[in-house]
Image (cartoon, rainbow, N blue to C red; front, top):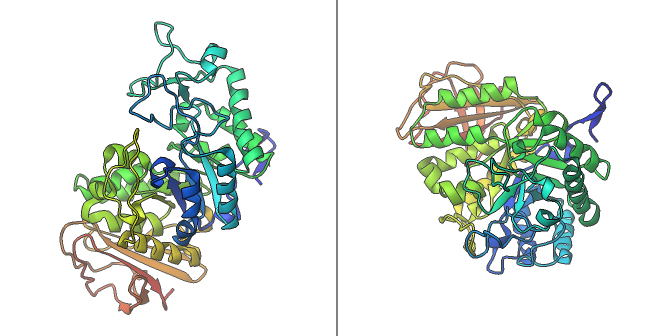
Length: 438
């Protein structure tokens, strides 16, 4: 349970023991299967669990507004009823069966919660128009500067709205045994609301909270994990050779020195937003994809898998229409599975305070090579990434590099000496586990 800060009477977030090596998986129920329902997700739970997944994040499950709807089926983020289930996905009993099945396989279930806005035809618009924000003409307004014209924003200065939203969030924990929430555009909602939410939900049972936002202050009393948007953006720019590796080093410096040591950061190469609007994992990262996946899993942060990545899905999934994933065995799935299996058995690779801080292992080719170790409890992991389209042969300038290692993905033992060049083909990566010299 979170601890109480007597000076503020707030709950300070502490990470649960079960989450120390956890991996999160995002489910886009509409596109997950040909049927696009909860039952189909439940059928594939053993395969998801077999990847090493611990947290199942379901995109919004609620009925979707019809007024100003985008496309044929609309956006799941245009919520018409916070207490109901979208019949497209099934019934509340179907949801309960999915949650129970996930729990039986030791997975937690997060619901995607949309607190900042609702559909235009949510009944709250008629019953409580005072709960909504207004524009300069005193009309209901979509979120400014975005093309979200299928929704209208709430006004969190209204205490009654806050009470309603907390009641709705408590309902799914109390009545359907979900384990927490992924909170959409969390930074658009006041932080004191989230602190109140956390306290109320934890009074029912300990929950896990993920914010779609990047702010260290959200971690203190409200959220377990925030998005590492900056990490994704830097890696994307590196893959397209738009920035140097120093920008990645600055991210890790910022993450280590400016963020709470207890904070989980969610590292990802894809999610529903990136896939739909910016491109597939292949479009985003090209030949750098596997190196980016390696860093997302073995570096600091909790890795996210967006459904379909493991099947090598090569299309942008439609957002407002049906567009089912094509499932198949794929090398990307094998890579995730192997890396996650390794992550879970090495104490140094734990999440947040459970793991070890990355320590740079400098080379003579800092412009193209990114290398580091993570060390804890006599376990040492060395990672060397060639984040360039060139073949490189770096030497290293640290005793941290030297030792006898097993290359994790090949199982081959090697002796590494800092003065001996390590030849890496374009965008290649090596992950080593120290057998001696830890």
